[in-house]
Amino acid sequence: MLEGIRVIEMATYIAAPGAGGILADWGAEVIKVEPLSGCPMRNFFKSVGVDHLKGNPVFDLDNRGKRSVALNTATPEGVEAIKRLVKDADVFLTNVRPGGLERAGLDYESLKKVNPKLVYATVSGYGLQGPDRDRPGFDMAAFYARSGLGAITTPKGQEPAPLRTAVGDHTTSMATTAGILGALLERQRTGKGRLVEASLLRTGIYALGSDMSIQLKFGKLGSTKSRHEAINPLNNFFKTSDGIWIAIIPRQGSVDWDAICKAIGQPKMIEDPRFKSSRDRRANGTELVDILDAAFAQHDLEYWTKALDEQDMVWAPMMPPADVAADPQAEAAGAFFDVPENDGSGTFRAPASPIRFGGEGEDAHPRGPSPDLGQHTLDVLKEFGYSEADIAGLQKSGTIA
Image 1: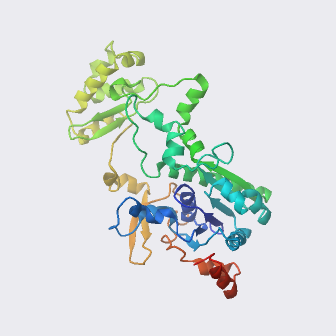
Image 2: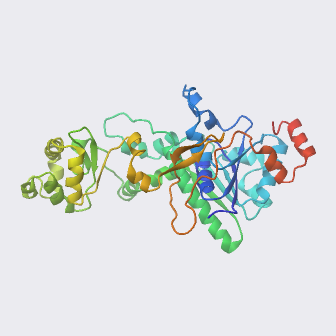
């Protein structure tokens, strides 16, 4: 559906390339401009001391279907090459820090003069304004720690746990993609481009939005408690006899109190004065969690699947990624698809981009493998009018390898 849209991506790591990866899955032409040393994520496994694995699925996820141009943008010729690429592009996507872009003449105001129709999307840790605009910000810092998300999801009195790889980045990728598409839609009406500004901090605050709304409105917010101290004891995790934790999420009000009492085979507990109202259940939460723990420990997951579904409860098992990869429902939801290997040796399974499109035509899918560093440098430069002599000049100046 994005066929004909050209994206110039001058970005490293994950949040911005993730947005480019979604656009590529949806049919856009994405030209990835990398430094001559390559995007650091190409060395993800080596950086954590692992060097025996073949392939790099972390890099592949965000860069499949793109073309790679290796370019030294610290040279005047490199900056000029970016401007030539941008002249006929629809989107410029970057996560270079604002000050660096301004010094290079690749900030929004500069590129808008080159292409007034350009949608210029910037992804940063903390935004384009304010004292921290040029502070580096990975997702565990800007998205998780600085936004309040890490503090509110850490149970009171416990040490914080690290955020898993790129959770905040990919949340920001989705937000950035939405902003780009909104600006492209506006451009259809006005013929003018627009600055699209995404930041890990702002996305993290929005992800925390419900709790942050309470904080902003009332000036206070309850902390995350242990299972036995939960504000709503039913909104909790319980372990089955075969060692599987299941999450139960009761709907608002008391609609699910009767249901859970019936599911655990204790309908008389519905009228128990200790638990009759939500206030009563909160006041006697420790006792109620103990009762539910004992009940769920009596049967395995198969039993509770039937019992909870019969009561139309909202629940799910806590599944490790290995089980999710084999989950038929995840497969049916289109959560995975096959990506071609770069060397043409076959395909491998990978997470799909987050939206499935119905109707006629093909679903969103990878347009190809992730590229080798600089794999398409010469082809792209020639497509944009560089002669053999021009390319030789770029090599001599150290702009390309």
